[in-house]
Length: 273
Image (cartoon, rainbow, N blue to C red; front, side):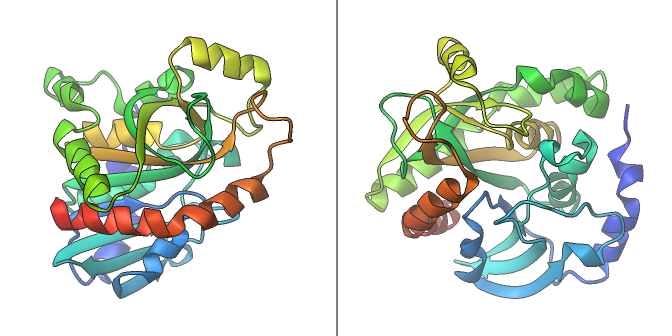
């Protein structure tokens, strides 16, 4: 079992000398959604490159910053720069933002991502509330981090994602008049996009959207007794569902189009939780 407390002791020690407050809510920004960090009152921004042993994000749209910010009277930690498994990092390295948030006493975590649409009723530009996950590809790696979880820790997953948090997200969408789909997020390790055959398999296993992040973060956050909510921005049709080839630029372009709705939704969620 990998001890994340020992692994990131130096990172947390360095952070605690700089942070202006302990955050109540952590928000992890997905591909193309990083602009949200500019839409709230930033108290302090800490480049992750200044922190010892903090992995470098190498993906376009993931600048490496931890923003301590405020909005609607709430204290926020905004993670701008996700660490992905497909970048060659170990799972324990991908979990560092969640570990930091939990150790800084954040009780809620809102995970966001860009995802490919599998559900035929979805189209690029939709926002999807994640109501369940399929992460079978990464079960072994998660066991290496969590070990043999205690009964108490296992009970945290009886409310995963948090029903109360998800209800607040749905309420926020209703109040802001934003169409919010719901569905299952299917995790893949990457680094390549999925094949049409793999997408057919995911459809048969109940997947509504597919991506290469979020699942393991949600599992670890729940294990750490945080309430988890998660939203996908559907940025493209999954492989085999569109005649055009998938590209990362397509993901970024669609995220750009939907970012105003995303900003309104997240701000309202912060107000309601």
